[in-house]
Length: 291
Ligand SMILES: Cc1cc2nc3c(=O)[nH]c(=O)nc-3n(C[C@H](O)[C@H](O)[C@H](O)COP(=O)(O)OP(=O)(O)OC[C@H]3O[C@@H](n4cnc5c(N)ncnc54)[C@H](O)[C@@H]3O)c2cc1C
Image (cartoon, rainbow, N blue to C red):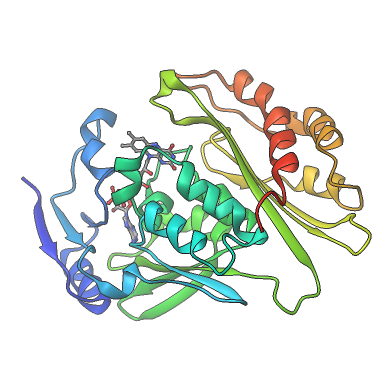
């Protein structure tokens, strides 16, 4: 049986993880850890539970940024965004849709943002592409202090974090004061045969200029490769054009072969590539259907 330590503060969790060394791991909602056996992975000998740490469950939606504690659940994130005055702001639609649409209500009630970002080997995490297209940063707490890094860098480094390190918070910058108005949307194709995990995910954020043209585009793709990533070729193609779903889908069709799509029991890589243009079309068409 693994041992479980209930940390009472962030400092306590960091110290407990550092003292237990590399074989210990944080435990948040445990929805991924619980299923280790199904993935033929052994449990760690010890876990440090984060669920009692109040500061990790805080979420603040402000004009210049959104701050999300690592233990904020998908359900809590979706409701915090929906509770913004006037409903979910246009620029944060992608995050609200990813949080509200992932998994099922039971999983969303306990699965956390930090757990979603750290479920290594899980290619279809919905929050990862959503946060990539929002240019989010991850704050990591360590025994010797804290460090902030962009999410793409974190995804490349997460398997090598030193003992005692954990994700404390995620910061999403917003467009206040930049003079640009951002809109965003999340499109996913769930597969019943895959337990409703998405076969492919497209997260899209665009800034429109005064004439309604795309001044800047950010596109992130999840579930297609082993780890979600931005799609710079499509971003460049969309920039300067109009937010036209058909033109975006045509560009995606032409550019999709830059992905090394993974084969899985639920879907071959070729299928994931095949559905990408439709997801890009759907995301572009859904821009701005909120506030
Ligand atoms: C039936 C089912 C359907 C699902 N469908 C979807 C879906 O459609 N879309 C989707 O995105 N996800 C889906 N999931 C996956 C689910 O979202 C993840 O299991 C969940 O996000 C993990 O969060 P958790 O809090 O439960 O993490 P845990 O299981 O507690 O931890 C997961 C991993 O992250 C590490 N960890 C946790 N917190 C931290 C932290 N703060 N810092 C560093 N490391 C940390 C743990 O050590 C562990 O390695 C599904 C899961 C199930 C069971």
